[in-house]
Length: 210
Image (cartoon, rainbow, N blue to C red):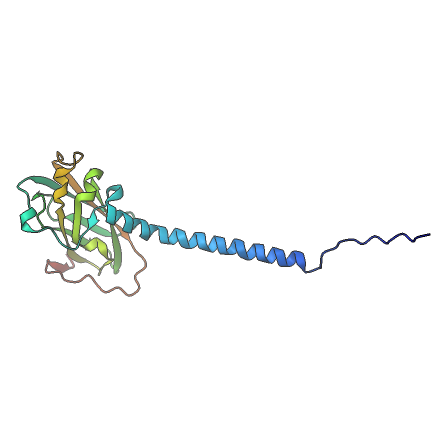
């Protein structure tokens, strides 16, 4: 009589499941960390994209204005708007309400910010152009919005922006008949000071206690 072969249960090694669970946990942790990293990177990357393309009403950034041979006799009126977000104890407004500018010409405008608190405060400006179709032709060469701005208690600072409107503005059916453009800034509080120096004197008037 042939003896019955004993039942052999296929029981995995005791450490197999914990090991697999550990690998899964590490993989999920890596995915979460990657998603968090991408979310933090998304804001500056989106801002760079908008500056390069004029997308979402964001003016483009340029190194210099076109040559004088590309300056047109045609003009548009540029209006300026300044705002301060909740939580920033500043007063912020354009020095000039509007300018009439030639297409292709370099222009200089000023905004004025005042820290109305009794402590140093750092702010960062977000900018926008309306109508949005004009944004891809609105180029800024120099702007206070490219960096953080720190104001001491009671300090006032005039902040320059150098800009031009690309001559291609007149060749686009969506923009060639636009006569008014609005350049708007909103300052937000930026608590990531990191020892930022006080706002430099750009040649514009700077006063304390006013």
